[in-house]
Image 1 (cartoon, rainbow, N blue to C red):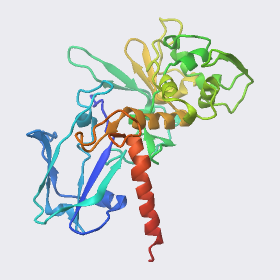
Image 2 (image 1 turned 135 degrees about the vertical axis):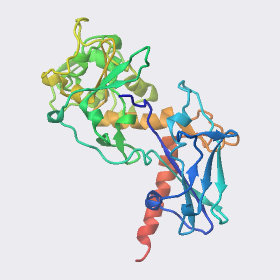
Image 3 (image 1 turned 90 degrees about the horizontal axis):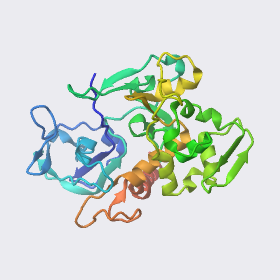
Length: 369
């Protein structure tokens, strides 16, 4: 079975109106337009003279408001294209053609920018090891070069989200969740220095290992010893390692060390001849059987499952890895985190959109019935 390797990150809804009215997010979600994006014969979005084109039809207008959903544009296929390197960017030009039969006026503030869209809906689906049904093979290769990945049972649920909410109040979906990396803190947890040397057998025992009495070298190369604590989590261990009270106190560089370590474990165990078996009944592999990926060449990957780390990784993705601007000429992305010239997604939502939505809710609650 072949599957696409990318997922949709964002959603943008733009509102036009001939009257002074505010369209709530709930109304936008219920809205069903009859206009259409220009696509090719196979239904794939295509450009005309460098523009993505949407034609507004009469059915797009409801209660005097025309709403255009930009979900097809807000996709890695469009936003990322072939730009996978830091600093890469993609400019998107859109042309709206009015065939509604009515005069449309841009409504001030008439847009809604969210981290989810109609391709990513629903809440978490709890997955327990009792539901384990094996790994599903997915072919990402070609006829000349087969490249199979085997996904654990949790990936086979739909929608697949953790029971953890991010900064935007949305459940964190597998598609944008952090993976558990082999990093320096994890290596030192097992008395190693090189994160490359951490094996899958060690990685699956992290959650149990951190509860034991520990002696390790912290981020300042100072030896630390802590007594056993049955409530200690992996996130708690990282706080000890970096000498902080909260993961929010970590610098961006420290977050990158945790989230951007080795993205996969390069061997199953210290014995290079050993491989993971999906039929194993050893309970230490329960989490991997649900959230793991078996890759070629005895390599392995697994999603992060610690709630605090999932939230940190989700925020890091939208605050440090993606930025946007509505006008590349007047407001170019300048790389400065809090600049109005090209904000990160998290900046925009936390400083502009979420407070605006909250204010609108307050006004709505204050209105008499």
